[in-house]
Length: 76
Image 1 (cartoon, rainbow, N blue to C red):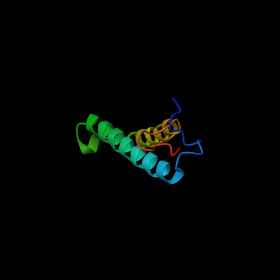
Image 2 (spheres, rainbow, N blue to C red):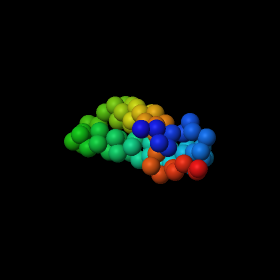
Image 3 (tube, rainbow, N blue to C red):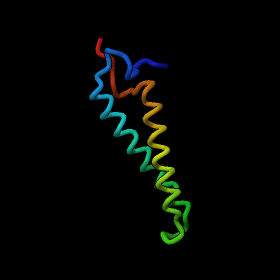
Image 4 (cartoon, helix red, strand yellow):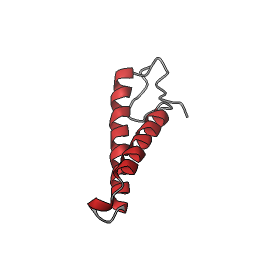
């Protein structure tokens, strides 16, 4: 479960931060697009809901990335 955990000494923190940030941005974009798509027109979109949902998704993405990212290998 914690194979490539950021808390391990053998994991490059800079690579982890870059990979986790990219993953979080992609997750936030996907969440925002899905919430916006639910609104039938641009005028009917609840922008506060879209933004808050995207931010929460980004935070959850970062928190789950602490357990490890497949993109960042341990340097043993």
